[in-house]
Length: 408
Image (cartoon, rainbow, N blue to C red; front, side):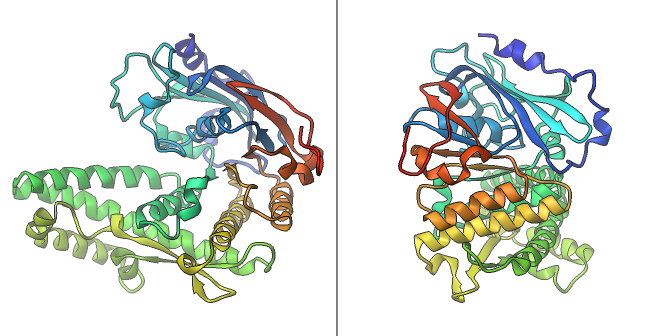
């Protein structure tokens, strides 16, 4: 297969502007072309997108979520499934994979792509990224496009451990602050190295102090970015009218985030650095650092019922989550960075009123959204406002919009 050529062929169209002016996306930003090569169940697939929300229907296992996962890799990180890069290569393929896309912006089209070369280390933490024909790091993708996704696995976001809530929050933060992901990665690297040294009983003060300096600087920046983002989101949630999706009250529980409410960042950073040094023996015994932004948690309450999200019904939890995503999308659109939404099996557990409200919101905000479902009739209220595609065993083709009671 020609996944290597596909990745290397991603170049800048003659009409594209200099990428130095592309740091902020414009309203209406969307993908117009998506190409997968040797990715998951696809030997090759090419989608031409007309700007409308995209509805992907087909039987379970047909490859709908694989398409969403491919789009999710046009942002930093491991995508919506969090899979190792080597796992994304198609069984029976050459061993690598590529995802290429054309991104329409106010300055013209920009070609972006990512992939893994055949023969790459199976445990590789890196992948190739090209923007406008030039090599780039994955973090550069966040400067061009913001992606937010909801998957069935996130239906339990409010009742399981804090780590998934942190990931969800940090992805929202990256929509406003693209450098946030770079800081988080740097913090995680220093955290892992410190944990390893303490686990091996290596108490080298100079080495540990250098790592703790990095953790303190990046950690406080991470906490500050989270607080700023949540302040904006609270405003967007408060301004939303009570409708199909309940209002959520959001906050963050964390040592650094709490300290930043009353102390200057430089003082918080200094105190955190000293705390890490003082707690080396304790953390060595625990096998991990017990303080820092990697322990923070996103707190959500149902405002109308004055109840914590984890105590709400499954349907209420999903409605709260969608309400947060929509409020965030409204906020980002108002600030000139409208996100692309990836909504996997989003309609299956929503009643007709909430489905219609979700679709109307997406259309009203002029967002590009990719939505999957097995039953085309669930998207009937969208009608011709959406681009309907049918997925069948690694092939994608056009489909007529479904009508109520008429499943094609």
